[in-house]
Image (cartoon, rainbow, N blue to C red; front, side, top):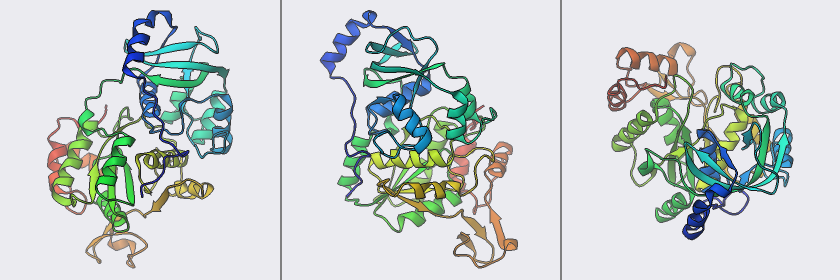
Length: 379
């Protein structure tokens, strides 16, 4: 049985066609709020239940509770604030407003609360630092001066160049059921796959019915892999090295916060809503730089015995010359002199120079796909 949605019910906040037509015909009567791309993607994730049980952007009580307790005010686990910021609101509490992105009306929002907040407190509690070199902190410091809470109704979606790879929670739940998967392990990624990833994924798959690879598409930091590169690389890996009846690939649009331990829990909640029963928590999950300990995210899950999805802690894989294959520290008895660790930085450098990585680092087929792109990295 796939997992129940977080909070017990899968949220769906999409207006019916007739209501949508009426709202759009009256759009000039609503206060207009322009939002950036990340907020528009958050809207979609609310509307399609990826962020269940949220029905809209957080109000003040929930925002404060998430910062202080990593839970909503009703005690439901929730670790990353999903908020809408504005500079000078041109509306009042109780109003309905239309949210626009790139000139397109994305959603109607029923404004429940307009409130102020402390940006430094936000940053320190979520990211454990106020260093603006941290990309998440930098974004918070550049947010508007007010937060607006209230429920939303989706009118339009942001154009999606990868729509054919995108599945919503209502669709993945049907897919898992059709395949007869009662237990599903999800893997979040923002990288092209190397042998370490493959080892972790297949190790987890030995314990469950199905593997759900769920790459994140959307704005990333400089040096991350571009969306189309990640998709093409995984398609190639699936074609040659994954059992078709036990693994599936679908993307999710999401803006990384790089919030480390808190975001690891948030990623697990998202995959719970997709129907996964287990979630792979990696080394330095959702981290950036050296702001978090390599396995700090694992410890954070101890705070959530009621999370409703089982974290799988599989240690970093490396190649052991003595074992003759990919292993991890728990199963390999040999010394560090036999170990070859897979460095993402080294792989990027090899890809940039056109040097083919050893087969214990990356499948040749995957490397050929990645190198076929003139520039596979975000600039």
